[in-house]
Image 1 (cartoon, rainbow, N blue to C red):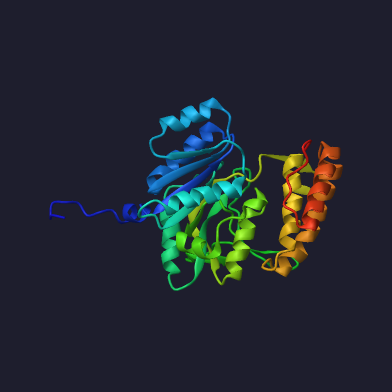
Image 2: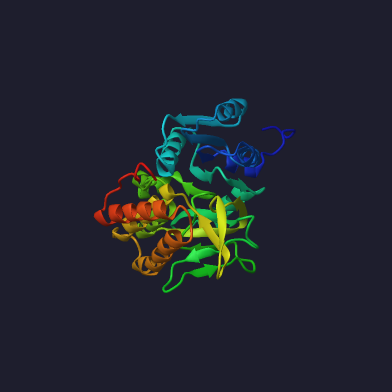
Length: 315
């Protein structure tokens, strides 16, 4: 470098080591465009792993983007499998040291990745498995808190004062920055889970392996939890509505996690009541009630047997 050359931008040097893995399935193209536009200047590479989207406009959209690589599957193998495909691709890219996991309905705020990397550097003397941003659902009044698993209820940890990171027991997968070396040690996502509790399972495994999880207070993500909500008397926030097929995975995967040795016992103790409440809500108050009951019972039975079987055909 000569005296006349500009000094390299520190942020851009760090960014080249980050590969974003974006998983899609029949995405809203306007939201996906916003996501990619916000993500592109923050990372070195973007890999979009698509789970068999049939919309021809999606392929046209991807062909027009020069800032991403598309890996398209001919069938939907689930969120966990798609994440693992993206991670495997990131491993083959020269210079990539971290992956940033992103859902199709999340949009990173400016500087999110820099803030996540800064949080990792702050915890350099600690075995940190992953750092995640504060996320805000546009339908909620404020940011979602980070969570520490307690009994009988979780401890909600907010970012106060000058604290740059907070310790937590769980991070949602979207916006999560993970060193590839940690994934080599802990392993990837459990593809048998397909979609629900994939991130929770990975966080439990990482904690059992001696790692910690950190929330980055200066990193912000816009993220929608669930597609629609329904008002229920006595519940001011309403409930997130799920299809019968999704309810199968929700029930099956919870019970599968109950069976695993690394799952914290206190999480199981306070999750069982949540499972019962969800079963009652979708059995009694949310249509199609009969299909909901059939799918949930099938999921519970599969979980009790320890079988990662697919949902019923009519769900």
